[in-house]
Image (cartoon, rainbow, N blue to C red):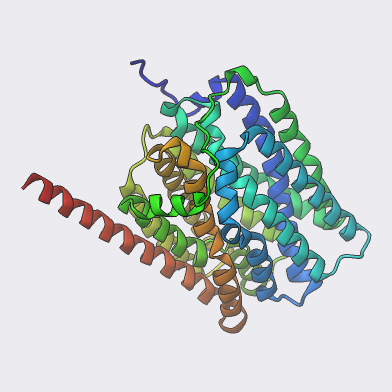
Length: 411
């Protein structure tokens, strides 16, 4: 058997993955421009620094990941993934342009942002599991972990650029133009999908149409102790820890009294950590469950340091640590779950991963926003720290059970 090519960027040697990566990077920059502008619009223009309102926007945007699970995973397993991505990416581009038009004309209201967050969330719920598993059609299995890590590198490299661009756009010409910028950025990923070499794609086995497909996916994942432990960890951190729009915006405004530019810089600095974490993942040949334990523990420690930060730049440094830990958890769970799952089940398992990891946001984001409003942003970060330490405990227990099973099998 031919050994897998070495190198951090080895997946980029293939034409299809390289083309996809270019289009996705441009679109990712636009996504981060919009996310930053949306949080700033709600926090400073449509409300009087109401962190709970930002939390409700997050809840509406990520809640559909969980609520639509019976359909999103099955769609990823059954339909042509490239065509489905063309539909979902085009729909999100149109929504961004519409929200931008409302904002530029001065007609936008808070309920508009809530509505568009829900529509974005519904579309993204179908897009995300397909986008994650589509990588398997672009690269060979031995390069899947590398391609997943490079996808995260792209997303988080864009995170370094997008918030800073958003801050400049908001300051120079207004928030609405950030949404229009994002809408236009979807053209790049649509072009990349249209020009892929179809003959070079690696088709994944499609699931047969049958009733109970979603229930089958749950039974499959819950019957695997490793997948079950991973999903519990993702729920804890995704629900109470991955609330960065609340953490960063409330600390920027409430603790450090900075403007949109300063807020954008903090978001970009966190992306330095996420890029570092993604590149570290790309160097690894194979993911390991023990990395989830390390990532969760470091995530908790990083949030604790951020909560105690005495100044702006100390807080920024803590965000780098949080970023590295977040990517360690995200990429390792993504690769482990894809590589150890039957191909015909991948869409449903990945939808479960996304639904549980992000679907807890309707619970966690309003709670974290309430804590920030009533007790201050530092206590909200304390909630994030607790989620990381609890997830690390779950990993310790799972590894202990695995060790006991292995000992019993040898006896």
